[in-house]
Image (cartoon, rainbow, N blue to C red):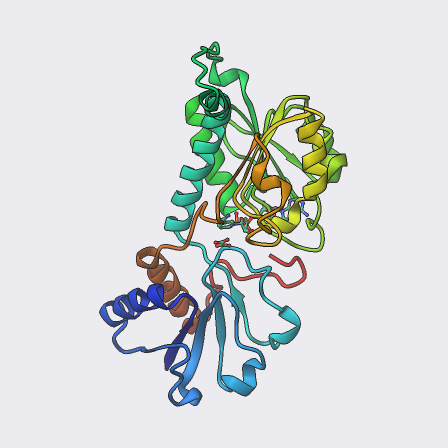
Length: 308
Ligand code: NDP
Ligand code: OXD
């Protein structure tokens, strides 16, 4: 039984070391060093190889090294091979930190002070209590829930929106298309933590963002293709939206002359909001392999119909 890792090679070296410590009985190979492909039963990848069964004839499970799986071409993955996304505490912690700094930067006017600094301007802005800042998170899964649970501790007025109804202590939960407008109309800082699916592609358009109160801000940590970039630019220029913090764009990176780069009220980070942490990810993957071998459901198994 062998495990194949096909993603960033430097991280792969860390996975190799951790596998040797924690599961020495399991062979470990780093792409493209395949050895005897007949041995390979498990694959961890950001993107699987083309012609999966031609390359890995005995493959049984594919693990995504990321929480999102929109980069997978499910049409090319045989139906009998389960795909499991990354559910591990390291990726959650990173996202909690990133979104909290984004919300705090909007609420405590760090964006605005950055603009003032450009003009050597020393001007105080009155501090508003956190309770007056209404944060709304699109997506109440592993990441959205953890982010809201932490934001709530600062005293923000927290809400979230998901496909099916959810309940999170201290968070007003909305669900489905019929409750989206009510969620948007009470949201001053909108955080996107949705998966990219056929239902969510392009969702962040002028129609949706226009339903936020005037002066609202966007923190986009989902996927670049959720956002209609031209609509965002128009809403920023009309001053309907105040700030946008974009960790993901479409494409990545944006072309050098794209107007979002230079926009004074946009900040862009290079898809670093969070990443799988090898130390905790390896524990989660090995646990799932044990579950699979015992005939138990794996944690994070993707529902191909839903696309996440
Ligand atoms: P989960 O699968 O745990 O949660 C997804 C949430 O989105 C669920 O609450 C789900 O609803 C909701 N949702 C899905 N489709 C819809 C829809 N059509 N309408 C309303 N709600 C919907 O995902 P994670 O929290 O683990 O990750 C979310 C995304 O974050 C990833 O897919 C990835 O795109 C992004 N990400 C970005 C990173 C970065 O560094 N920028 C790092 C990691 C992830 P329901 O609860 O009803 O199923
Ligand atoms: C992920 C990501 O999906 O890093 O894990 O974007």
